Length: 121
Image (tube, rainbow, N blue to C red; front, side):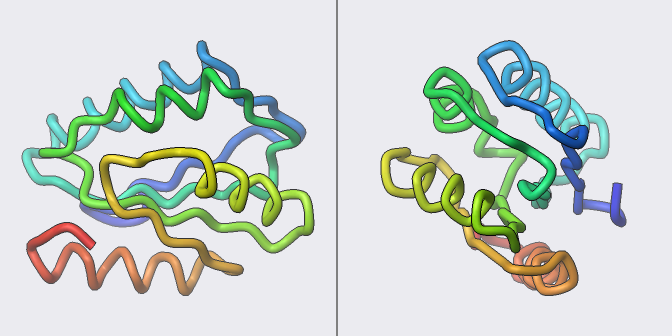
């Protein structure tokens, strides 16, 4: 938790996101905001990942609870992470707004704005 209603997803260094990891992540995020009693934004630090498969992308596109998650910020500064983000956004149909950032501070500032607005990004 970065602060109430902003959850940071920080993958293990060198991790590979697949169906199982994506399903676990999505369940955790949904449950976190459900338990908190208020929707929020997830900030994902992609730089630490080395891959994400198609099954993982499908999970993030379909298994989140849109009543609980207002948006997702994808943070990536490396060439690999930017490519993964571009690929994800290019082929995925997300159910909540997704915005990309080169640094975490900008992503968190955006998440605060989304939460303050009371609507989806």
